[in-house]
Image 1 (cartoon, rainbow, N blue to C red):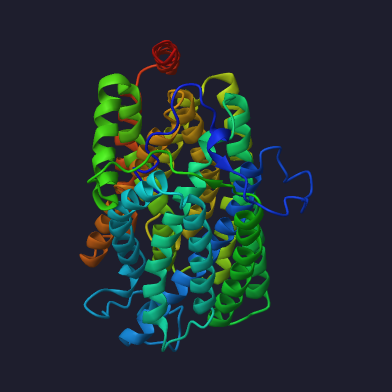
Image 2 (cartoon, rainbow, N blue to C red):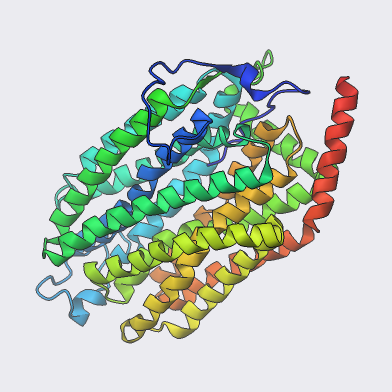
Amino acid sequence: MTESLIDNQKSGNQSSETEIVTPTPNRFLKLPKCIEYDVPAATGILLDSMPRGALIIANIFLLSLLIDLAKEAAGCPTEDREADEWIQCTKTIYGFKPTSLATGMASTGSFIIAFLLPIIGATIDHTNYRWAIGMWTAVILFVVNLFQCFVSLNLWIAVAVTQIVQAIIYMVHLVPAFAYIPELTNETSKMGRYNASFNIAQYAFMLIQLIFVACLVLAKVKSILLVRYSQLLVTTWIGVFMGFAWAYRFDHVEAKTKLAEGASLLTIGFIRSWKSLVFAAKNHRHIMWFYFAIAFADAAVINLQVIVITFSKWLAMDDIELAVFQIIVIVCSFPGSKLIVLVIDKCNPKRALQYVFILWFVTLLLCGIVIKGPESKLYFFFLAILVGLGFGSHYVAMRTTFTEMVPKGQEAEFMGMYLLSTQCLIWLPSLIFTIMNENDIPMNYSVITLGGFILVGYLFLTLMGPLENAQKRKAAWDDETSTTVA
């Protein structure tokens, strides 16, 4: 996600519409009213989020299969995959335990992403390629997932490499998609509903993908065929929904600012990231603390999705148990998205986000204390309820809090730092988890380390101060800017 990207949006009272070139032909292609918003870009984001949800589920089962294929390639006994010899096999492949594969890949991809996205962000800000980057990254995602349909014991290394590539392309894809969000509306309640609907759409397709996989499991389809069919379905979702969104709902957007003479796209993103952070520290310190808060908290939340896969292997969960766990998470995410909107309306977005952080901390702490091995896997399913509520509410509260503080006319610049903050540390928890796993430290203790990241995020969020003060600062800054422009 990160870009330092979207640097200076427009200035003064100039509206976002003035920079949009309406390129989308065939806008007459109507969709059902339940998914067609009055703002075309909102419909585009909604459609784009659908296959992203399915992709998350497909990756879970693909990574689970890759761990098994790596264990098989390492020489672990395959006669009985429920026996301790298979579950506790410590043989290595290329110097690492197969159970370190998923977290190792996540750490590698995340580290590359942290350095790459500021360059992508600068490209989006200073060129007319926002739409093109979104469209072509969608095409690459389609091709990569199509290739992964052919996963096998002979191709597992190649597929693992494409998983790293996919993780990078996926995050690059989010940069142009997320750049449209601040331009959707200036109304807090409407923005909250938009974010909630995007979340619900994503989780709905996660559930659809899960139900499809569960049916294959119940039909006793072999794991490798299950993953191939799952990949084929998600490839179809990407082609249909992402393709339609970028072809017919996202507008081409002109460069926000021209690149200064002598400046380079390779460095301007990093420079602007630093300047944005310094600017926030001097003029909007509450936003700086917010950046730090989401950097640590999101590092834990994003990595939890990958760590659960490795954790399930430690608990000796089979495909049906993994599917049941994910179904519980997805089903509980729906009330999570709805409940957090009620909390936001009752309190405020920042207070709601604090409650979400507390929920995450308690969940991760309980996981580390209660889950001690395969004999306690039943408790893991109960914790899935809390995980679902957390995933359903986390991003709604986080994005709504952010939009409440951003000064008018600087949405793009601050969104760039927002995206950078959510990605800059996600390599660290998976790296810590991998190191602990390689040193035979029980995985339940490794999960507790994620709670430490959430706790640090909560402390930074507290330093932000009351949201009312941030809103007053935003209003004062907007008035000052308007006066200066006038």
